[in-house]
Length: 138
Image 1 (cartoon, rainbow, N blue to C red):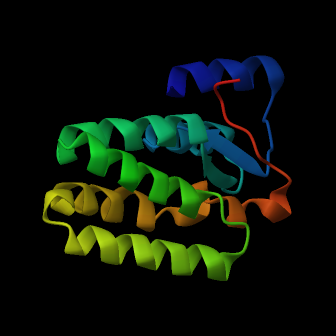
Image 2: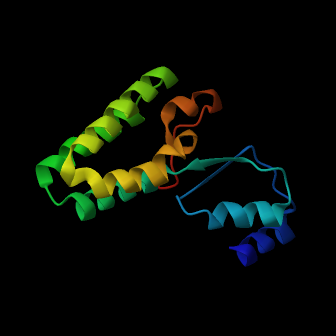
C-alpha cells in the first residue's frame, strides 16, 4: 500500500481529506497517513466489510443457525441507531445478552475487541455529522 499511495502522491500531489474509509485492518489507513504526511483524517470502516466480518465470525464462532440469526439482527439494530444514547443502550443490551449466552462466548470476545472499541468508526450515530452513509463496495 505504501508503494501504491506513493505513486498516487507522485502523480496527484498530497491528497488532503477529512475522512478515510477502509476495511477493518489498519494497514491501509497507516500507509495513507505515512505517505500523504497530512494530519490524520477520521478513519471510517466500510460497512460492507464490517457486515461481512460479522456474518463470518458468527458462522465460525456460534455454530447455531437460529442463535446466529438472532445475534446478527441485534447487531444490525445497534448499527441502525441514529442517536448515541440509543446506540449505547442497544449495545449494552447486546453485550449483556452475549454474556448470558454460553454459545456466544467466542463471538463476544471478537466483537468486544474489534467492534466495541472502534464504534466511532462504524456506527451510524457517529457518522451523522459527516453526511456519510456509504461503503467502499458500491
